[in-house]
Length: 281
Image (cartoon, rainbow, N blue to C red; front, side, top):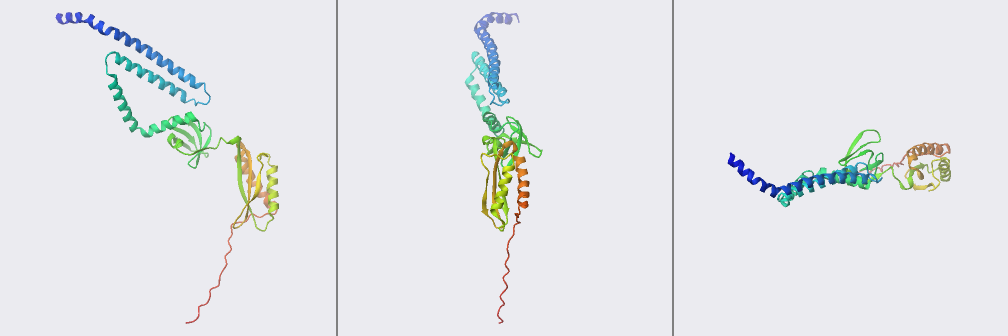
């Protein structure tokens, strides 16, 4: 036992001389690397948070990603100081990452779509958006999915890949913050068209929420099977669109009826052709 201990003590100075500097350098590298990782993560987060157009969810994620990247780079550099073949290690990590990526392809597509949504901001929290024909009100935006609710209340959880891969209409953002109301009113063929046009123009002029610019467009649109169809097209502020639309529907119908115009039901004329008697054989 004493001989082994003596041999160990004899080789200890040589080991310290050979690996002591590497050990000290590795410790120093770890300290500097972890400190730099924390500093870079905080600076990245703060820098992104100063930009108002960047979603609040995005800066902490980028900061954490930068911190992890510096830590990984530091660990590889430390292993390289002790003679570890980091090239093969990087290859193994790359293969493992590829395997995990293939296994989580659907999840990663949601993450990629979430990043694109956070960067390009096609909508914000509280906006009403139309996706594949359905209207949702956005409650929160995440990396994997967006939480929303339907206008009548039920909650909805929409994967980000379903949002970014589809045509999206943001109903809360319009050109000039105004929106158009389009309605068609049918009058009977026996009614006076000019009277109906005058009535509808008067309704549009009396409504304070209807904009003068762009000017209302009220004109004969088509001659239908059962009615003369009159286009009623006006503009209003986006925030007033729904309430104005409902009020105008009621007022236009009442005004047309008060002015003597009839709103016909769909009808069809049926002509009975008498059967021709067959000659007696």
